[in-house]
Image (cartoon, rainbow, N blue to C red; front, side, top):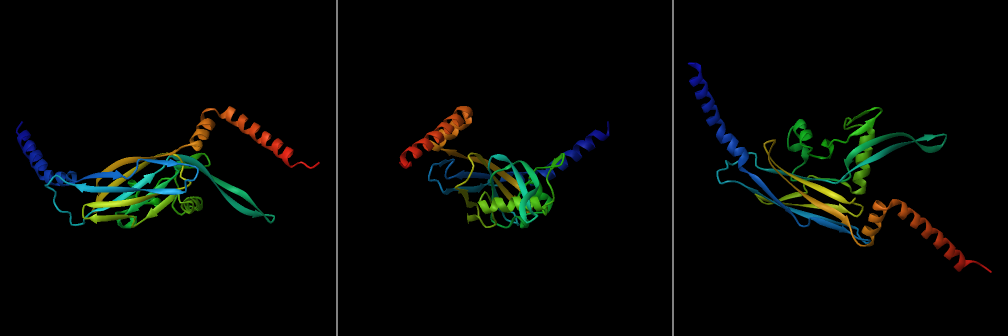
Length: 263
């Protein structure tokens, strides 16, 4: 019975001592907005970009942070399953000899930051928060197992290189600019071959190697016009769409034969 007051006093003292630090960690918050939440893909679509604007707000009692602020914007497209193949020369002919299946990986990743990702924290911190292309988990089927592999794995390296060459994976260490100490902007590139679907936009506010705030929004990429009509027909009425395509090809061949036949 005599120990309870001491425990209560100790708990109250610990709580009081932790209050300023907790308040400081929770004081800042992010407010973000993108220039467009809907990207329309038409027949002549060759790519576009969306601009993200953000602000760092506080409650007026924030203690200045000696390390300052860093911001990372990561955009992830809808997931897909991809097979990567390795070609080898066999009897003078290049053939596929090995393959690796990447399962439910983002079809698009863009990482925009004000500094190189490796400068923003410890390796484990970067992996845990998926900061940078190298720290994204790319789940693969390896024999009977599923999981990611070491960053230097040849299939993983080749997969990243191909995606970057296509413009679907993008990392820009200086792609985010601070307009003022608390206002920033970043331009998200959307290539002409961008897959349709919902793109998650995650913004992290960092300081001293810690995440102190995060904000999430989304961009939707959709087809419009004839592209959207044909895509919906292929998705919702696959058999009839295939049948119509076959008859169209047959009719085109007959018409071409009639127009260009020689007497």
